[in-house]
Image 1 (tube, rainbow, N blue to C red):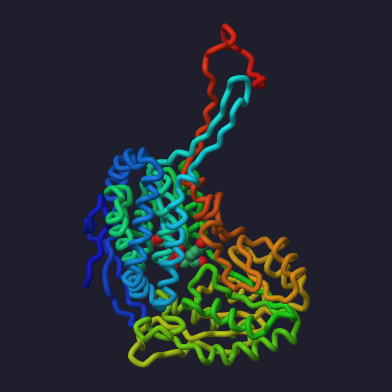
Image 2 (tube, helix red, strand yellow):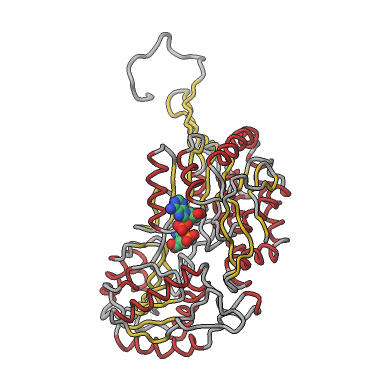
Length: 499
Ligand code: NAD
């Protein structure tokens, strides 16, 4: 049994609390490692050392910090397969999907190579007679990242790269379900030249999260996870005077107009609904065809595609479409929700509850499940299922489909499939959701834009990655300066314009 560690001051450090939690192989249901759960004291020591290390790192010029990012990006590329394997081993997603997980994180590191340009302030010459104004962006100090299980490489990279490139030290608390990738990334960062102590990976559960939220030295918290926890973290961090951006869950709708290319829409729905077993915050979980003809045409195309899906462990080859869920509890919850859908009157078109795989009978698999005639009152509509379950809600008109999407409490991602530019344009401008796809089912923006949902999918300000991340991880200082040659004698007592 492998005993995992924390990463403190540039070294793997064993936990001292005696508290551990199991890390499963989700394909077999077996425990493959145990991860230490840090105490308040362990966290405090890691923060103290990070604060010391941050002083020199924050004073290092941004271009030198960017060079660490350049080397880091090269090392991620060199270690792509090793990182992807670590992701798949603990998460269960397929290797091609795991490489995508690493890749979309790497792209944020690539943007951070341009940190000097993103950290530049503003300047105004002659804001008043002989008066110049300029602003600078300075690091916050020690910040924290708290990340979910479902993207073990991408989301830690989204947190650490902009925070570190901005001159902060970071305490990263990865998901206790998939902690190994973060430890590997920390090793690579050290090899890239990051000074020891600037990134501390502290493993743990609620106890250490609460200690992060209450620690006076920690200036900001970047969180990604489920909505109730995001809201809790936001409230507690903010009430302790910290900056917080907390990204939560989702229920992403895809509208299919009658003029859409139905084959392309069906392909998109199968990939976006069942890829990564539906465990993506940008998964499409609700298909909203407009008109019964569109709905029937879609079902007709979805069923054969679903029947062909290959579900299995990542070790079974690159042609596996998706793997197991993350835990037994999550498998049982998803099956329970499917049962509730049947009981509440939805039409179960394909049923994944009895899925089993020879040799992997104890794995946390659920087969692909498709519901038709789902309504907004049903639990399968109201809950973020986070499993391979696609619900079709029939709408009579475009306006009804748009209203349904807008009335949903979540607002992470959404998509429309149509051949009509005017409808697509109307949808993109009116819908109250943070990321919109037009004939694009999973519109995760490229790394030089930014990622963030609306409504219950995000709490706090500014998005993840892109220029927003540099604003989040720095504070602005504005200097008003003049030099005394030619100034009038005496003090000025009135608070007045710079005339
Ligand atoms: P989670 O909320 O259970 O856990 C996220 C983090 O919070 C973990 O590090 C965990 O240790 C910690 N945590 C859990 N319970 C806690 C508690 N009671 N107090 C303090 N800390 C706690 O989320 P998860 O199951 O790991 O991830 C899946 C969720 O994340 C889904 O809801 C998904 O939609 C969401 N997600 C959102 C985004 C986004 O950018 N909006 C991206 C990926 C995942």
